[in-house]
Image (cartoon, rainbow, N blue to C red; front, side, top):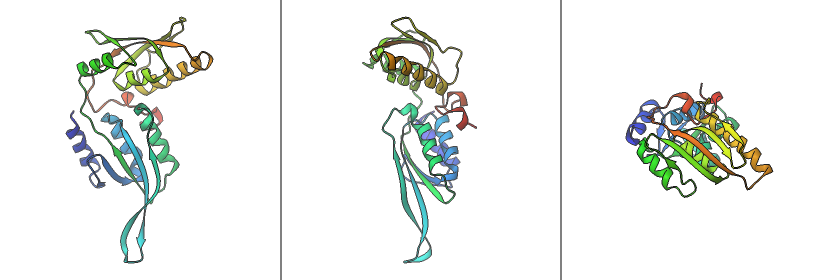
Length: 225
């Protein structure tokens, strides 16, 4: 699915809301979680900000005139694999029936497997080896960012290892968010004791096409219903 199709679907499903720019919508807050779920299904993970707005009657003119009042803003400056769940938490913190949400985000085409393989091979922080059948190997990396990069590019992680021989098996976990959560938690615990530990990862580069099944959304299970 290309970016234009994704935008069209959003417009059809949320067309009663107020479109802003190509990458933005103003929607009632009570529809916020549903909108996030649709962004997750369409693989739109680059949410850049959410603003909370309230509307009130402007008595200077007439009570029928509604004015948007900015109340809260959340700009996302961390890894894109976490922005949808952070956005959901932000909405829960400011939930009120008379408020509106202004989302800004980027929309991309579904990226073919060969292009994602090229990105992984050429990314200096990964230097991934990707076989013709989509098997991915990464060795000797520091920190958790490589796991986020692999999962963002639709690599199903099978195993995370350390140079000292510790192993985390992930092949039995299908969900992208669950793999991200378990891998980063495991690596974080190891890193606390040994901050210079280097990790290796093995996985399979998946074919995919939006809309994604729920277990491939980068949202926790509690936010997929």
